[in-house]
Image (cartoon, rainbow, N blue to C red):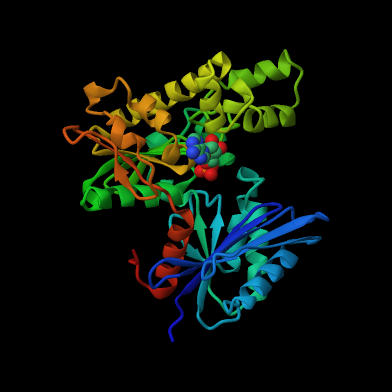
Length: 405
Ligand code: AMP
């Protein structure tokens, strides 16, 4: 039997999310999550899809090695062990691939060294990703391990979009440029949107709005990213659950000089205590909508600021692309919050953008159009699937072919 399984690992500093997929049809065999690694109360939740019955385990897991061993044992209990010859590869989500990694890449020592070299621009994410890779390598040294980079899809951005207008020498010395993130989602959703329209991705221009707790927009021209809203780090761009997004950088100098805040305090303020949570105390769009329905003005203002920024990006990317075939909403907010979709597009009829209220209200896990038939630009809801995209890219690379779904 040929190897058709791919394990996808998303390793955070104290967590590992994983999915085992069968790449003959892209179906899930098992999904799970280990949290609070390194604490006394580490928690593993594992679900084999054959039964759908989750198993949970709580106890001390000292490190990622212990976590992956526990995952491996759970998979073995389901007859899906990592020692199975059916496992073709392990695909790792790696947040920062810099300028160099434009494609998924089979991991060797040189690749590991480069991911390590990028730690200064991704201090929170790349070390955790590296730990996950090294642990998986120790578990199955014979197996191809593939890095799929969050930044790769955005490496096609022209210099005019990727560079900040700062001193070139300083920028180059410190590798300061706009890299963009959520790339696997933007790649997947832009392709799935073309499919929904019955067109080849190379013929379609799409604005992708990935609205989760983190949020980013991208302008995708004929399947290639030409601009995206996140920058050197995921802090730039849209208003997010806890991040400010775009802001005059002088706010930081002001907070230092006048507010007496330290670099770390400002980092925490802008990444963890800003955005929706900073504006109204909640970062869950469901809760914000509930408060708005009760007449809460603070929640309303947070929503309005969120929508105003979103609209600005739709307009900006419309101008960047010149011709837009579709606007696609995805991720937790984009897939579920119909009021966000309606408000983001409201008043943009002159750009050919409109939402049909009835279609917009439909709840579904399937990609779907929510614009009226007569609209010049399709507005779509396209559920993202980053794990399937990572598995697809991983499998294609180790199999030497590109296509699966
Ligand atoms: P993600 O980061 O893609 O998992 O998205 C998480 C966010 O999606 C949450 O913080 C919520 O704000 C939002 N979300 C999830 N479900 C809903 C829903 N039914 N309605 C509105 N927002 C939702």
